[in-house]
Length: 144
Image (cartoon, rainbow, N blue to C red; front, side, top):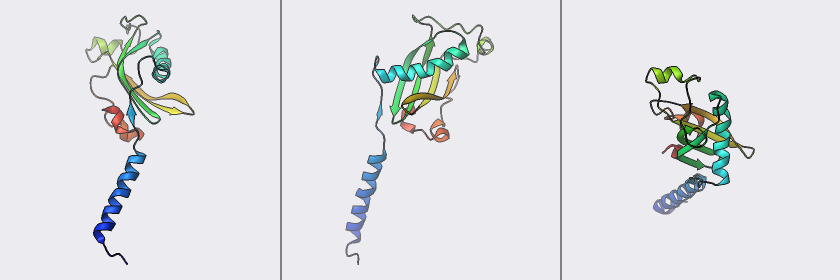
């Protein structure tokens, strides 16, 4: 027989709060030059170089990792910092039409210890990653 509903509710609150805290992943930004940051950039670099048919590096403006998920936002550049030549890429027409912003965003997931690209978008003129948390079941805090 339950003698104190208030005690029961208080205990229930603490149990739920502790469970939520244990399941929440800490969001972090891998430091420039770290192995984790390099692994994420390298995983993204492979498909981007294949699509653009040229070598690229990324000027990373935002990189957040939570558990096995990462979100990167930045600008693709030529090694040495020069602008990417989009003239012979699928983006040439969008640039000519004025519907291209020079940036990239990407969602990655670590599987079997290796980062894999889930989705990336180059040149969007809006916030294309809105809703990726729900669509891919990724932690929403990496997009903020």
